[in-house]
Image 1 (tube, rainbow, N blue to C red):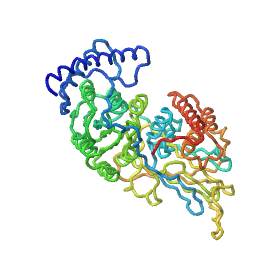
Image 2: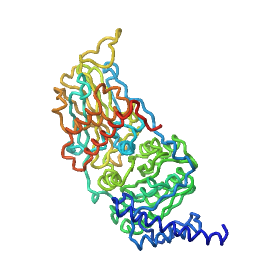
Image 3: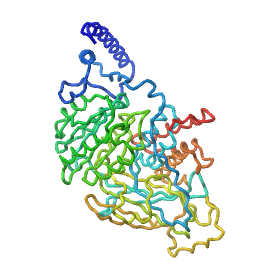
Image 4: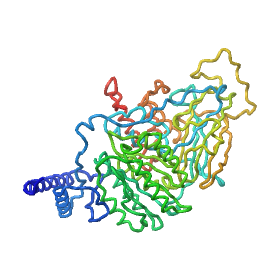
Length: 566
């Protein structure tokens, strides 16, 4: 553009900026405070590699001065720099898993799986429902919905890092079966008790993050974590788009203003070289490794990688290889339309971390403030559960959820097979639907197979084995205990925790296809959840009831519910 043309454009641009600011001020005065706030960015040389047109730079500077003068703290409009029609079609990616099958105890008496403490599926489902849309079936992972909520499980006893308890009740959606709950509760730790942390914020600043649900939400989320840093903690900031860079070298947690300034300076644009960003983040973490401390990368992205290595298996293998360095990888998912949930969930699994989806700053506070110790500190790694059912007590069973955590029977005792980790204060719930011996099940009896001989261990429903590694140890430890046969309680007489977990499990199945829930509908799931709401200190159970009511209205609003395209 010529100098003369530029001079003509500047007054128009300035006038448009002033009008937009007045409109934002009016909205701020009349409506609730936005969840994501953009504070005026201080002048800093931290990020200077992006090419910005002089006119656009002057417009931003003028707008910044006017925001400071009028004290308008609303988020700046995020321009849509993506190609026309990009958001007209959903490009979200989810991993498809078939429901766990029904097993006959006489043929397959042993069930083995890795625990899972991820909760990203619940927040992602919430995002769809709050947007007036039923989620894609593959976005619903039952165990992540159930494990989203805190439960009052027994604390550890002795030197074990977690407590274990069980409960049995009549299944609310099938009176012929029983619902067995296995509950794990890890010992809690305050943030002050945690060892020093070496954290690397790895932030996607590509063009797909140039939206309100993208980079602005990331910035607000990371600044919540900055507020929790202690002087002994250290933080680095690495970004990637078409290229990668270390925006902030390892900085003590006491220098919060410096860290916030680096986060505030980030801007989005360009392609997505995710693999090179991950490589650089691991290099940065290794460079400042703290022996005996917490060494973790927090990857904030929509997972839309398009430069360098971008195929699913190679990226998973990269994270799996790098976890051997002592650095774990936590993934924080952001964004809509092009969100790659499949990659985010599996990267965290491979990187010995956890996965959360951040749909609002309340969720960010839950993950990075209220549950910071659980997010960062591991009390037990490679935790595997194995249940051997007694054929004289149980004829059939199915595990609810954990489809992507199934293990072979021989994997249980193999310490080289990776499994899930438990953070401080985490609760883990596993649910089995079982058919009592002699009861009506799902499977037709076999004609040519002899009936199983009654087991000699009378009074035992099943035998539970749990393997785990203490932090820093290479060999696993074994916990074993029987699950005693007990008269199953009616669901109404079960604990509030079991009833609420059952309501969430029924809801998750109903969002998919409800093949096992029969005539038990969403209204009954809602009623069960409402009866088990309890104290609800954080309001999470009340929020679930509201979401289930939204899902019910979406189911009944049309004869064929319109689902999000997968």
